[in-house]
Image (cartoon, rainbow, N blue to C red; front, side, top):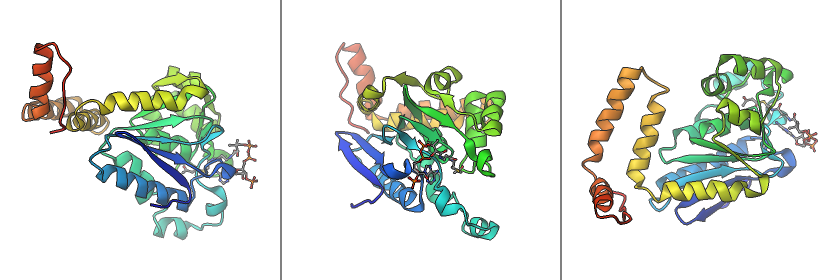
Length: 258
Ligand code: CAA
């Protein structure tokens, strides 16, 4: 499928999407977000793809929503079109595991996009920020909510109220990113992690993801009940039989994703 604003590749069971508007530092234009949504739909529907990696370029993962595109919007343009809603959140609604591999700027909607992924791997030159306040608006794609859950109120307030950026090292310390690697190794490391996840049973990986995400949406007791029921349901999988038999027989499992 032809895309104007992204590049799409497959690496075995891993689908890779590269945001590709380098001249605009991958600013999230309507065209880019439309392409991203379509590519995610395709990978989600493709049984041979187990994990999706989203990355940008060396200088920018994405420098936010396209300011030139939205600068002239009135309130009713934003409200009636429900700006930054449907396709913008597609990464967050993927059922397969997702990884954001972030180098350079991840600002505004770029930081918010990365936070929609299940795991953020950062290059050592990555910079995260919610600079919306500096252009007279506020984060609109989940920044005030997801960032606060990741790094806590005080650090989220500092970033959202000052527009100050966080380095990759600080982001790792704060729990925003899972791992920091040298910029030259970013994609290899993201693909290595993606391939490891892809070597597991796909339905089990999806159940893990669904259960971890549940912790954001519910009480501890309800979350544990949800986890318990999903755990029970894994005993209906051929892959549970295979995984446990392989352990007992001291061999590698051969998962069939069922
Ligand atoms: N929208 C549109 N164009 C953008 C952009 C954005 N968010 N960010 C960068 N660009 C464009 C610049 O206009 C410039 O284009 P021209 O060459 O045509 O002038 C090009 O990308 C390169 O950018 P700079 O010359 O500014 O590069 P720099 O290295 O000097 O600075 C930067 C890099 C610090 C990231 C700076 O570009 C910047 O501050 N960008 C805006 C960041 C921002 O405010 N993001 C939040 C947007 S609002 C939002 O995202 C809302 C939401 O919650 C969804």
